Amino acid sequence: MSALRIAVAGASGRMGRMLIEAVRGADDMVLAGALDIAASPAIGQDAAAFLGATSGVKITADLREGLAHAQVLIDFTRPEGTMAHLAACRELGVKAVIGTTGLSDEQKAQIATFAASNAIVLAPNMSVGVNVVLKVLEVAAKALKEGYDIEIIEAHHRHKVDAPSGTALKMGEVVAAAVGRDLKDCAVYAREGITGERDPSSIGFATVRGGDIVGDHTVLFAGTGERVEIRHQATSRANFAQGSLRAARFLAGRATGLYGMDAVLGLN
Ligand SMILES: NC(=O)C1=CN([C@@H]2O[C@H](COP(=O)(O)OP(=O)(O)OC[C@H]3O[C@@H](n4cnc5c(N)ncnc54)[C@H](OP(=O)(O)O)[C@@H]3O)[C@@H](O)[C@H]2O)C=CC1
Ligand SMILES: O=C(O)C1=N[C@H](C(=O)O)C[C@H](O)C1
Image 1 (cartoon, rainbow, N blue to C red):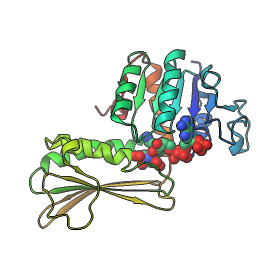
Image 2 (tube, protein in one colour):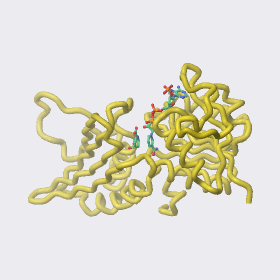
Image 3 (cartoon, rainbow, N blue to C red):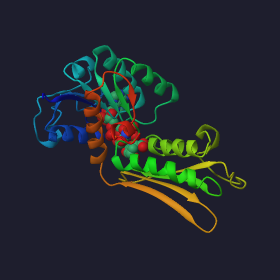
């Protein structure tokens, strides 16, 4: 079988580099394109130069050029970049794995329309562990529905630009749905001053930013006389990259549709 041709967007970013390394390490894939923004000093460089290697793929800001030979784009950039990349993917018939977080509801709705013509995997966290935790949370939240206050605490590195993390928000959505609430109505994103007592129907979020923390997520169910904490800690971005490659392989067999990592991992 011929190798799956992958383009990577945000090629000089933290995840972009991890993905280029992972694609080069996969014997069923080949790097077929690398995109970055026009202002990036990496434009024109070989995509594998940071590894001290040569891939023959130059990093470009020209979407047509970067996607011309690709079957699947893997995109971990920023919402505005992702939306522009997806428009080009639609034109060129390229499938997409999207890891970018901080997308608005409108942008997510537009991604769903793109998926009518191109198969897309969209997930705020590509790691196997987090996606198993999302399943565990469904069970835990249903069982701890009464008498337990739900709080979600996340910590990430100092460079992260969106808060709460996409994963924390997804955890909130899963838990809210499991206890019959809508996260939009019950989320509390900040507390300061005389807040009054905690509303028992609320789901609280706390965000920590610092250093090189890859990604920590804890969901706390605080009851009377006991508390349950369900926690995931990422210690390397390699998990996200390997999950993305699994998502790309999954898309190879699909023409259209919007999928999550639960579908990719057979957890749905
Ligand atoms: N789903 C998951 O499993 C994971 C998701 N993420 C998400 O992935 C995204 C990227 O994270 P990370 O790699 O740490 O971020 P980085 O800032 O390290 O990398 C982002 C890359 O995208 C480029 N970029 C910035 N703005 C645009 C734009 N408008 N259009 C195109 N490209 C752009 C950057 O270029 P330049 O550096 O020149 O600005 C850079 O190359 C974030 O949203 C993060 O939350 C991260 C890890 C796991
Ligand atoms: O920006 C990051 O680094 C990460 N972002 C994702 C998120 O917002 O959930 C996933 C992971 O935790 C790393």
